[in-house]
Each structure stands twice: as C-alpha cells, then as structure tokens.
Amino acid sequence: MATQTTTIETVSVVRPLKVISFLCLLIAVVLLITCITTNSWLRSGNYKFGLFRECTTSNQINQNVPGAPPPGRCQKLHKHSGKSYITAVAVLLTISAVLSFFALIMNGLGLCVRVIHRKYKFYKIATYLALFSVLLDLISLILFPACFYGEMKDFGSGEWEFDWSYGVAWGATLFTFGAALLLICDKEHEEVCHKVKTVYNPPPELGTD
Image (cartoon, rainbow, N blue to C red; front, side):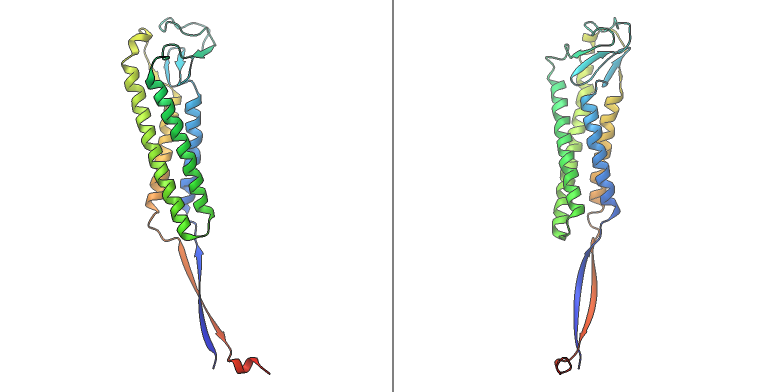
C-alpha cells in the first residue's frame, strides 16, 4: 500500500502597501535634504533666508532688511548667529533625515529578506523610526515660526511670508507620516501563504527488484 506524505511549503508575499511606504520614505529623505540645504524658508521682498544662509535675489537691495547681502549674493546668517532656535531646527531636521534614511533601509530589508519573523522585525523598526522622525519634524516646523515671530522687529518693517523650503519640509513630514501609517495599517495583514503538497510514496517492496 502506498504511503502518503504531506509537506507544507511557506511562501512570503510582498504586499503593495509595504512598497508604497518604501517609496514615501525615499521621497521624504530627498525632501528633507532639500529643505535643509536651501535658503528659502522665509522671504521679505527680494530678501530670503534659510537655516544657514541669507540671500538677496534681485538687483535692488531690500532696504527693509538692514545688513542684507549685496544684490544677487548670499552670506552666512548674521542676525541669527546668536539665535539658538535656528541651530535647534537645523539639528532636529538633520536627525529626522537620518532617522528617515534608516527607516528606509529597514523597510527595504523587510522587503528583501525571506525569513518571516525578520521581516516583521525590520518593519517594526522602520515604523518606530518614521514616527520619531515625524515628531522631530513637527517640533521643528512649529518652533521655527513661533521663535521668529518674537524677533521680527529686528528685521525692520517688511512683510514676511513662508517660502518654498518651509513648504518642502511640511511635504517631507507628510510623506514620512504616510509611510508610518501604511506600515501600521498593514501590520496585522498576513504575509505568509502555506502551500500543502501531498506526495504518495510506493511501498518499499515495489521499489526493489
């Protein structure tokens, strides 16, 4: 009589939400680097400044901002040299970019590895890193305008508005939060499929001559 052997094959399935979260983190890292390194956080007329430098963008010096750089030139922030909040914002966003980068790596490892418990471990680490990055982003983006409001009088009588670098920072925050949300929402979904295969082995006496 033939003997029956049942084998169970485990197959890992990559869910689309994990891939989307990876792409969101990648975009967030690029946006964070962009907002940190550019000089367009706040603008008043043809004068603008970022976290490290200030610039005058047109051929006419903005008289509303004393000490502005020459037309078409940039220089290190002179009015903010003693303002610790600018340094704090730059440091927090830099840490956030590093955390988002490591979250991206963890998410990528989770997509690549085949061992199921290691997948969950990488996804969990990526989720925590992304959430902490969002927290740092929010602190930075609230701290920056709140502290600047208290020192606007030092810049003269010009009207101020947020420039595109500040908007890019908010975009990075939203993409990072979206990535964390996708990882959380897809956390309970099963990524393991089991294939059952039955093999019939002939009796030993049929295998011998």
